[in-house]
Amino acid sequence: MSLSINLTVNGAPQDISIQDARVTLLDLLRERMALPGTKKGCDRGQCGACTVLLNGKRVNSCLTLAATLNGAEVTTVEGLAKGDSLHPVQTAFIENDGFQCGYCTSGQIMSAVGLIAEGQAGDDPERIREGMSGNICRCAAYHGITKAVQEATRAMSDTHTGDVK
Image 1: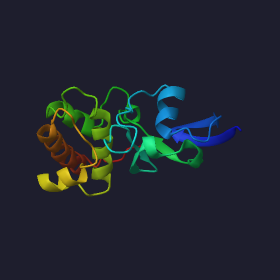
Image 2 (image 1 turned 135 degrees about the vertical axis):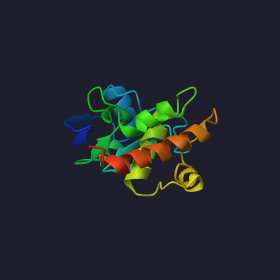
Image 3 (image 1 turned 90 degrees about the vertical axis):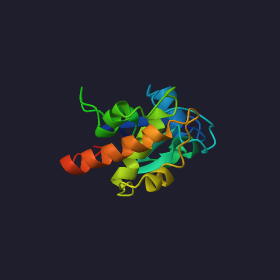
Image 4 (image 1 turned 60 degrees about the horizontal axis):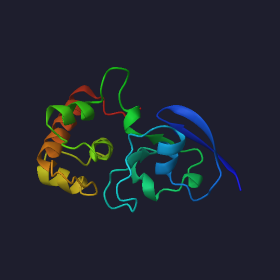
């Protein structure tokens, strides 16, 4: 059984034919759309490495069936930068050593972008850690991640560049 869906991925409309209704958004992005920035970690929704924005909200793409997304807008880590200009969250992660091995980084960045856009980040480290708690870092780079979210929140509120689009 083949199913056709229309998605907007990183601002570009896509017509996609799905052969298997069980394919996840994660597998669609990585295997069919050549967007490998979204990582497959646990494949059970427990680690957050696969976090993307779906209609502006954070989701675990490993738990999201692609067949249910007709008309949806998806933003991946590849869609954040504008040309050579990194998104403020990406810049803050670099400047604050918000990563070590890098495997969780794209999910951490996407979760941070969503958290800030939701207005849930603030400047309180505990609040940020709670808001980012669905994203696990095996290297324990949490201090740098928290600092990066704080810095990006300030930068985005100063310049009003919080839009993901």
